[in-house]
Amino acid sequence: MHQDERYKDGMTQGWIDQIQQAWIITQATGRCLHVGCGQKPIEWAVNIDPNPDRSPWADHDYNVCDLPFSDDRFDSIVSSHVLPAVQDLYAAMYEMARVLKPGGYMAHVIPNWMHAPARLSPRFPWQYQHQGWYSPQDFEEYMETYGDIFRVELCESFPDFEFSFRVRAIRL
Image 1 (cartoon, rainbow, N blue to C red):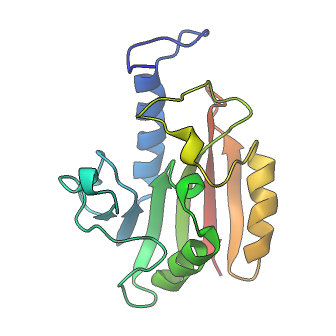
Image 2: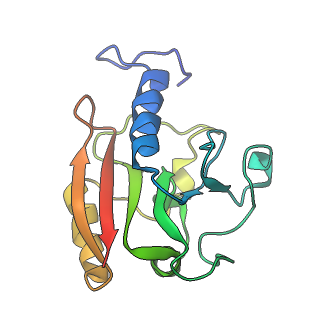
């Protein structure tokens, strides 16, 4: 699907992307780490993306599973459509916890496979996703694994669509 093609309810991918990105930007507070920035870096954040084709937009090509930052360095960590593509999510979650200050927030936009339209294309390589959360509830149950590190404060579909959901968790 291209940016201007419409889903059955009239929404375009471009419109959905704008809503998701606007929410991520509102969560990027203080000293922020933007994981998997893609082509949409946040001006005041440290933008990382390990994909070589994203180097024009990323500040660094760091991998979220092995961050070179000191402990408790960031006030917030944000990502959009990144967590399902991480091979070792356990390592990534602990690395994000390590560099996030106690009381800091992480916020993620995550594809909802139950409602997401088929997007098998070079732009949306779903076949390479390692996690497949089918609802916000699935992800919230997954986060219970990290209950001694994070407390989920928000885990819900976007009000206007269910193709993805948003999560906000505080580091304990």
